[in-house]
Length: 329
Ligand code: PBG
Image (tube, rainbow, N blue to C red; front, side, top):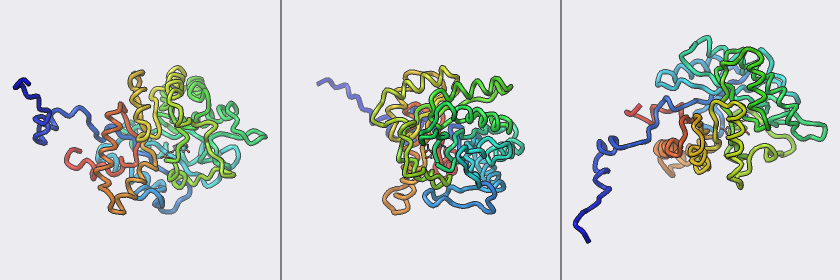
C-alpha cells in the first residue's frame, strides 16, 4: 500500500464544491412545454390523470404561456383537440382548425420571443384514433397519410408555426413534409422529428388529455417502434436526418436513456427527449400517496435525461419549474 490517498469524497464535501464541478445543468432554456388547446372550450379542464395539466381555452392558453414565459420557458408544443373528428382528420389541416388558431394566437401575442412548435399527427383528429388514415381493409395507409401530413404542415406553417413535430411514425414522413414546405415557400419552418418513438404504454394519460380512443381496442404497434428492438432506433434517426430533420427526438425518455445515449454518440444534430404523460403521472401519483418526494424525483429524472445526452426536453414538469428548481432558476 502506498500512502497516497485518492478520495473522491473531497469533491462532495459541500454544496459549493458540488456545484462548482457539476457538469450537467437543467434550466428553463432546456424546456419545451406541451400545451393542450380544446376547441370551443368555455373554461380550462384539468386532465384527470395528469394533475396540474389542463385542456385550455384560447384565453387560458395565453395566460399559461405568459406564466411560462415569466420564468424563462419560451418554447411550446401545441396539441389541438377538435370538436369534430372524422375518418380523414379534416380539422387537422382546416385553415381555422384549433391547432392553427392556437399557433397564430401565440405568435401574434409573443412574436419572435418564443418558439411555437405543433404536433403534426392525425390521431387527435380522426374518429378511429389512428395516426394516419385507413385503407379499405382497416390498415393505416402510409403513403395516403403522407399527403395529409403535407396539408397539415402547410396549415400550421400558414398559421406561423416555427417547427412542426411529425409524431405519426409513417415511413418517409420527414422527407414528404420537408418537400411540401420547401415547395410552398416555407423553407424557414423547421422540423422537430419524433424519430425514435416506441409503441409505449406510458402514453396512457395523454389519451385522456386529447380525448383519443383507438377504435376496436387497437394499438400502434404496426407503425411505432417495438421496445424489444434497440437497433432500429439508429436506422430511424439516420433516415430522418437524411430526410431533413433539424432536431431528432427520443420518446419516451426515462425508460429509453440507453437509446438516447447511443444516438448522442452517433449524431451531432440537436436531440430532444420527451418525458411523456405516463412518466409525469407516475411521479404525481406516488407523490400524492406520500410514497416519495415528487419534486425531487422529477428533478433527478430531468438531470438523467440531460446526462444521457438530450439538448432539450419536452416535459409537463416545465409548467412547475419554479417549484422544482427553486433558487437555481
Ligand atoms: C401523437 C402523440 C402522442 C404523444 C405525443 N404525440 C400519442 C401517441 O402516439 O399515442 C404522447 C405524448 C405523451 O404521452 O405525453 N399525436
